[in-house]
Amino acid sequence: MTGHALLAHVVDQPGILFGVTRVLADHSGNITYVDFHAGEASADIYLEVTLADGTLGRVLDDLRQVPGVQGVQEQPPFSKIYGKRIIVIGGGAQVGLVAMGAISEADRHNIRGERISIDTIPLVGEHELAAAVRATARLPRVRMLVLAGSLMGGEITTAVEEVQKLGLRVISLNMAGSVPDAADLVVTDPVQAGVMAVMAVADTAKFDLMRQLKRRY
Amino acid sequence: MTGHALLAHVVDQPGILFGVTRVLADHSGNITYVDFHAGEASADIYLEVTLADGTLGRVLDDLRQVPGVQGVQEQPPFSKIYGKRIIVIGGGAQVGLVAMGAISEADRHNIRGERISIDTIPLVGEHELAAAVRATARLPRVRMLVLAGSLMGGEITTAVEEVQKLGLRVISLNMAGSVPDAADLVVTDPVQAGVMAVMAVADTAKFDLMRQLKRRY
Image 1: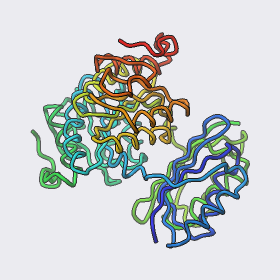
Image 2: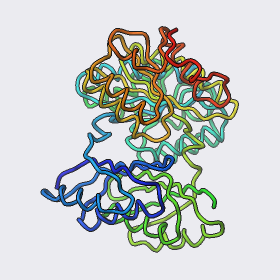
Image 3: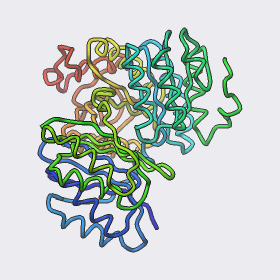
Image 4: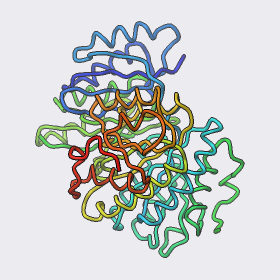
């Protein structure tokens, strides 16, 4: 079995994903990642799929026969390009500084072969922040969530506990509210919080978050 | 026709996407977005789909009958949570400053109802950067690419021209190499480049990139 990343350029019509996934099911291909977002008249379906050795050629031929498929080609997988994701959510001032620390530290690891990207959104409001925290668990390749603000609690804390149960680790700035109590690690300096987030997910770093659980810096 | 965002919790087995997309095809649902990333034994399939009014209940019932589907629920769509994405790629020092500017500016627009997120990756190497630029065109909800570095050209410039043909706008820092010549807008100050990138995609801003095309600041 070998992993392949495929990009199908398709006409955006009902049933197109059904047609494409049927070909992969017929060949006993195991889809590990799909990304599809419809544009205007045409769209791309990006797939990562595990196939039995020697079957790729036939799979590509069959995909090209699906009505609405205009072309299919192999691609480098996202995991090799954008890699592990750290999501930073909160107030603009703090999110910016956490991002600065994380981007600088990711640079040092990416140079040594890692692939870590830092994704951010500045947001206001308990409900909006809680929804964004919950959504991180549904985003691909997310390894760490950093909450960067001055006051977070209530529904946001509930959302933090939910994503932790799904296996996501959460770093919080030292701030008012109950989020720091729920977080796996609390850091006062936003730049250091960003650096530690990257160190915790980098295979090229020696930082073990599990040995730091519930500490405050 | 009404848009819905659905999250299906499934057993990760071959054919599971085929089963789920068949139900939507049977109900003439038009899938506009799919995100699926297999985890360990179980996984989530996130779908945005347009359905005929009044059919949601039956679609949910049928989805729950698909072998391997453990549960299905409605969710707030990603487009309402993480919104438009600006991708910043390049050297850590410059990416960090572009992100600072963009995050601060996004904060001001998100407070007024926009949803703009800033996603970054620090990278080294012509081939790696070109691959990351090309991949932006395959990522969902991307509205702007900012190239932040000191020297970019060659294969990176070719990749910039390719994503521009796919409709993506590109801002470049003023730097050595041929990337600034290919970019839609060139900005010297990285913080301002980040701010302008957000202004160009925000519906709450008055900045029109088309009136600034090929200018240098």
